Every structure is written in C-alpha cells, then in structure tokens.
Image 1 (spheres, rainbow, N blue to C red):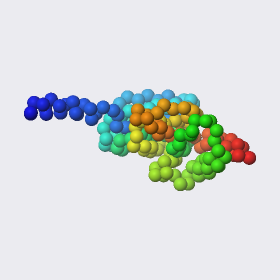
Image 2 (image 1 turned 90 degrees about the horizontal axis):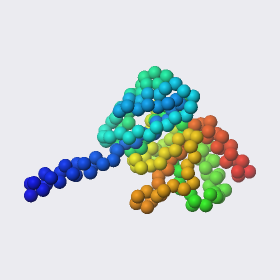
Image 3 (image 1 turned 90 degrees about the vertical axis):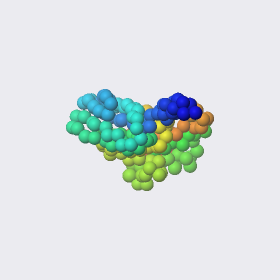
Length: 193
C-alpha cells in the first residue's frame, strides 16, 4: 500500500501544476521583451501587447525597464491580469456575448453608451462590476479565470468565439484607450439618433 501511495503522489503533484496559475496581458507603446520576471519595453511608437504566463499562486514581482525608467509591478494571487505600460489610461469591461445575429437592440446600444460614458469618467469602476480603469503603470486582476479572453486596444472582439472545453461561452473583456473609447462613444451615439 505504501508503494502505491508513494507512486501516485508524484503524479498528483504533476497534475496540480498542470496549467499557469497567472496570465498577464502587458500592453505598451513600443516592443515588449520578457525574460522570466523581467519586462523590457523599447522606445517605439507602435502599439504592442504580450500575454505572459506565470506560475505560483503567491505574489510575483515583475521588474520593468522602459524609456520612462525602472519600476516594478506586483501580480498577487492566481488569475488573469492586465498591466498598462502605456502613457495613457486604459479602460475595459466584461463583454457579454451576443446572440451572434450581428444586430443589437437600441436599448442595448443606449446601455452601452451609458456604460462607456461612466467608464470614461471613472464612475462605477470596480472589480465587482467587472470594469476597470488602468492608469499608466497600473495593473489589475481582471478575472480568476486564466482562460478568459482579453482584447486590448485597437483589436476587435471576434463575432464568433469558440466555446470553452465545458461548452460554455468564454469570459470576454475588452480594453480601449480613452481616446478610442470617446471615438466609439461618438459612433454609438450616431447609431441611436
């Protein structure tokens, strides 16, 4: 019996370490290079993002070197995180999946206008509401689910997404720069006129 338990224990430990306990979407202006816990952002004018998988359920400190200097970002606990290394503020929110028809009712558009207006002002922003306002250099835990789909600025959420392995709709979050959000708000306002 002892031999069976000792033989099964290493397999159980391997299974427990199967996937990453943390994912971080790093968003910057300029190329991103990641080596272990060291993140380097090079001078540049183009949008860049990189998803990084980290292990361990405790605090992980990322050491960041960028044109602005050296700093750190603490990623605490398991889950999915977004780290803003741009010079501008990012806003983001959970995106409920639509019916796939491509059409949206006017009341839904009005609700999105209101929600986006609130986000731009920084009102009603909280993890409980599943919406976020990230100042430059700030990170936030977006979800406990590392399988979440997070789309950064200048990327559209695909019209159709694959279901998760358990057959459920994926958990989707979309982030925008404040300027991009204002442009989107203008387009949505035109739709309901």
